[in-house]
Length: 387
Image (cartoon, rainbow, N blue to C red; front, side):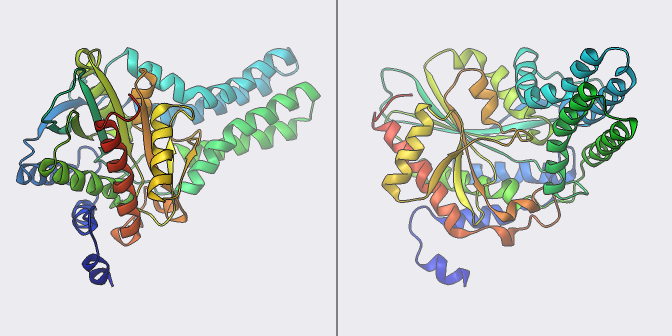
């Protein structure tokens, strides 16, 4: 079946993109032998394509893992405290109960600001990973230095619980906070508080389990790596006219976007010169509809939506769920035009599990993603719109 599809393919070369993705779809959690194997494979493919790749270090701090485990139990502690003080100061109890609600809603913003202000630092005894970079420069440099950055993360992780269960637990914590706040004001009985705290404890247990290395990570994020590798091969043979195209395969995304933070801090001086836009691929390749995640009214978002109309590829804007973060947000928070492309499909329930295998990757989805990317890149190169 796949061979008949491959026979009719033109650019993008989805056969090659799929082969790259399948070859990279194995457990590759940060610090594992699989991650080192993936980095060597990426470097080999880029070198074979005469793209002269290089690496830049990404210190591992563990802050992302620590934060994800701390928030649920901090919420339980605050719920319990609001129960204890409810008879003394209902207004205080209400405030305490609402803190986890506010923190859950703001934690993405807090984490992004924290990471931008404090660059990742290698801790004593800790190991590091790296970002892998490659570039193609246009033959006719424009008057202004313009760089299009294409990102995808190369690490994976797994959880013992399904993704859907973890997301429900993460959304349940703020809801429990609201219930506890209502109980403090309404003077509900102790049994109501007990049930709320018990539910919060269950949610915290579901969320605080450590991550493992059991997922092949086909959709997260080998399919994206395959698309970007195929585009790198294409633009190496057909360079843009004026742009600098730069590929970044980020490390430690699953540990709190550490690769994107390291890129932002390492490239701070360069990013102050010229104009830069960032496109991240995360979770593409499934049978679901493509989405663009980013500022709804941003120029780059509009460029992808316009490309989807011209290419007749279904695409719509979507807001990220409050429990998810993507690499583009690091650059968007620093003020650069930045979006992520991803799919929304039932297959995503297999992310971070053993079931995220290459059989979930759809050839047509790879083709559509590559066509949209090429359309936007070529439009920017031709001077249509501006960064």
